[in-house]
Structures are given as C-alpha cells and as structure tokens.
Amino acid sequence: MLEPDAGNLQVRFLGGGAVVTSPCYPASVKLMQYRISKPFVGYSGFIAISQDRFEEAKLAIRNLREVLSIEEKLNLILENYAEFERELLRLSLNHAMFSHQDWFSYQIEIHTINRRLINLLTTCRLYVDQIPQNVNSIYGEVTGVARIIKKRMSDNMIRALATESLRL
Image (tube, rainbow, N blue to C red; front, side):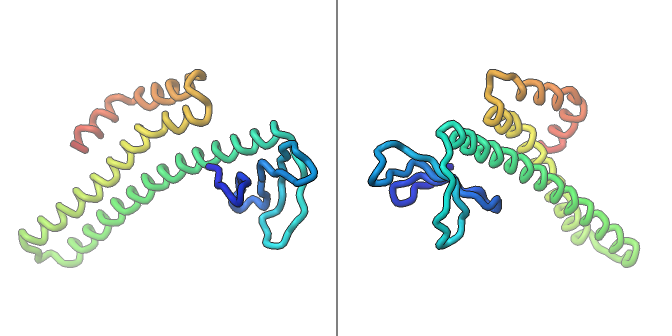
C-alpha cells in the first residue's frame, strides 16, 4: 500500500492527479508534515494537510483497491461467460455448416466446452469465496456487512448446490 521513497512514505492516486506524501522532515521544522502534491516531474508545489486527512486518504486508497479487486473478479466472471457462450455459438455454427464430423472431433469439442464451463464455475466460486474478505477489509468484521452479503448469496442455495455439483 505505502511505497517508501527516499525516506518518505508516499501514497499515489493512480490517475487521480494527486500525491499524498508523509512524513516530510524539513530541516527547519522537527514536526512531521503531511502534504498533497501533483505527481508531475519537476512540480514542487504542495498543500499541507493534517495527519487525520492523510489517514483518511490512505484509508480511501486501500478501500478503492479492495473495490477494484471486487470489480476485477466480476470482470473475470463476465469474460469467462462470454468465452463459454462464444464457444457454444462457434460449435453450433460449425455443426450447422459442416455435418460430417467424426467421434474424435466431437470429443475435442466436448473437452473444450467442459474447459470453458469449469473456468466459468471456478471464477464464480472465487467471487463467492473472496467477496466477504474484500468487504470485511473495507467495512471491518464488526459491522457484519460481509455476513449479510454471504447470507444473500447463499439464499439461492439450490442454484449454488447445482453449480457446485457441476463444478466437481
């Protein structure tokens, strides 16, 4: 999360246009200072901020990384679903256009469909298993938000059991 840089700790907003830097020890001041500056080479301007604001920015960056992790997992599910559907569509078109296929080619197609389905189900399982940890990291375990999410996900238990048995 924090990257040491020449004795200073820096938190960078990736693509946000601001850098939060702490602690800075100027020679004239012995107290710790916290600063925000633009992440441009040669830019020396900054805005001094309080330690509380710095801690808020650090927490916001950590939470944004957790949300990004959740979005990346969802994107994996969507990409695997698109690959699965694309493969089914490709195979359907091939069967409609070219009906002369042998047993060996059918086996290859079955293995391809199985692989796409396993990829999809595995990423769904990853999502279900990891979301509570991501949510706990953002809200804390004491809030119980992750338990509520987990309960809502398990309310569809019949679908989840069918999916789990297919995956195994």
